Length: 169
Image 1 (cartoon, one colour):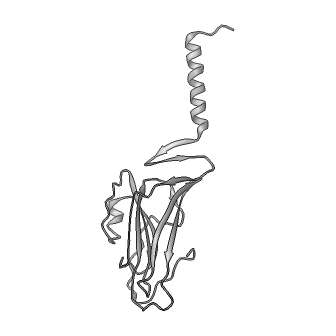
Image 2: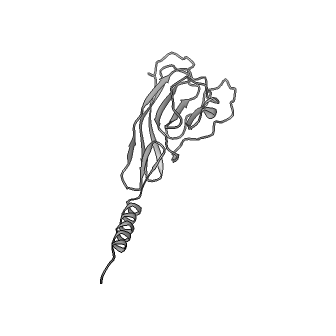
Image 3: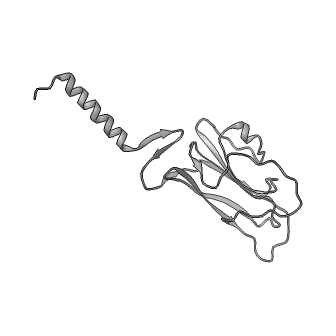
């Protein structure tokens, strides 16, 4: 069988396209999202935490734009929403300033982003003090769902009672 030069080039291009299609990779936003079985780590670019968010309920939020961030005025942290997003965890109102929360790890597994948080509890004999602990992490932007996190800020409620912790903690 005799092939023309154009036929060989076309075969090469088709083969190359098949390799690219079979790789299962695409690049969305700031993190390479792959179809591989292993987790892909997201670097935590910056983070901050504190005792007084003034949020009365426990929340886990993913913020991808300035308009949504304006609804959660906790603390200013530099973020470039074209390349980054925020993960916010609040514990709500707790009765000790010995509580704290940190975002330890962020990773993609299959088609979701997962977040590992660590909550530190006060000593049993700690003096009662009202606190509203929070943690904010800046990570590379992704359009994937973040497991357990909401992209919608809940309506604010005013309350004088302690908040209920999420079931995962």
